[in-house]
Length: 234
Image (cartoon, rainbow, N blue to C red; front, side, top):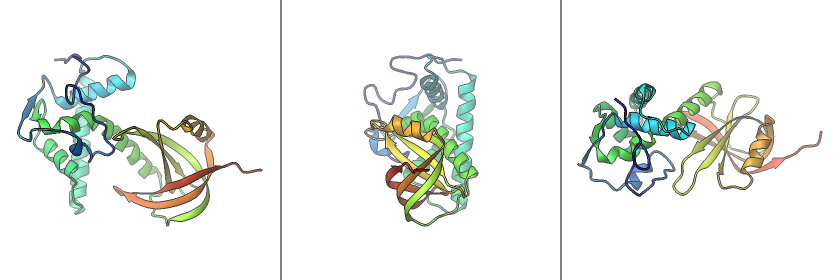
């Protein structure tokens, strides 16, 4: 069975409102919903969301196909394991993660509580972002380093896109000679975004600023605050 595009897309969060989410936890502050209202789609809602995401990424207008069902299964398996590990470590679940756990554990597919619509719509985007973060964690030392102020020469690794409430932003990731991670977040409207991207593509950058030590979801890294790009004379 396939589900064709209708209206504005494969899956609409509401008829007219578009939700922009800064983090996955914010989505529940954005959506007006009836807690008890059930919604029914022609096929698995998460597969519809995967098809919608794939269509945006590759600029196509496809129906839901087998690869979307496969991706939906991968997403459920991924977050089921991730949430289980978090629970085993005794870490508390946020509102979002608790609802995600309920959505997965109760086996909702094409029929589900309406309150999960926004979450389902955004899950493919979160999934692919989290896979990239996992890759960064695995390939780094993942050691916690102290906050410092100074100058560092860093190797450019990747650029990831993040949704936000009012606008999107790009997170540029770097490492040093010890494979410690660093990040800079730049709004997509920033006029210097493309210039900074082109400089990063040379492979290494020299930056001064405050390197703030952070830990999020077992990823240790430094956020670069008030960065200044330096061009050193050789």
